[in-house]
Image (cartoon, rainbow, N blue to C red; front, side, top):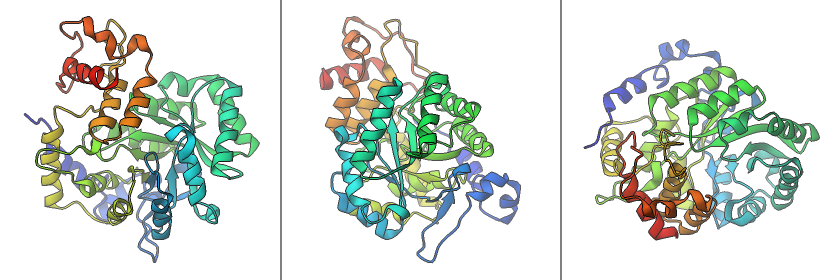
Length: 378
């Protein structure tokens, strides 16, 4: 039975976060006001990415799965100016594709990539490799990749990221996280060196994440939302309300931009059209139906299962790999994500357990999903 209460979301929609009128606008924070609608003649909605001062299109481009750079070129032609990639996407080929697409457009495009927390030599080498693949002299935002709060707060990691910024090879420092979103957000705020955070955020996210995002914006740290499409699962009713899901995220004006994963020109055109559109009754109805359809499938990445398994199985990371396989339909990405999990902490460890001692906050069938992961990836 689907448990989400859309009355609560209707309240959010009509609150200051919903930003539906002048009164609400006057009530929100000055930092949130900076992220308000700013439509250009082209019809593109721009928002300010926190203290970076960067003016970003509210619909950005998640390039992780992109293989045809003509899709990204089309996005640039429309007015999308924010593109997110990473050093590890497609074994580095994704950065090369992005570099090809931005040729001749560098001054008009905000290029964002990622580096894994490691030694100084490894992180600096990764930075130089990214610069070479992208064929640029500098990167606008370098994000710590899929970091935990301890990594975000680590003085040595902070020192290395600051050294990158001081070198002029990057302009701003960011961090990304798939799990313990609130913990990562508050760690980034406390560190006082991160200019932005990239976090999973969609209509299935708990209110605590929305609250943490508001705190981030108030601190001057910019917020970018990923996983906006809640897995993009195909359901028995074939309900995939992509525009409605993106609208839900964008009604929160504390979010500067979004990076839905895009692989085709039709997708970027569909997402682009969302800018400035309000949630309608049909959108809420579709979200409710889709929410019910994925209720027993979708991992909210709430982090409550983290550390609960006596065998230290990385349940959340395994579930993310499953989402890439079953939702994204990208087995290569799913397998690479799973293969990054230590062999002593993946689903193969679960084969000796008759029952799972870990209980999901959202009643997901953990043992069943781990068994599925084992059959797919092992």
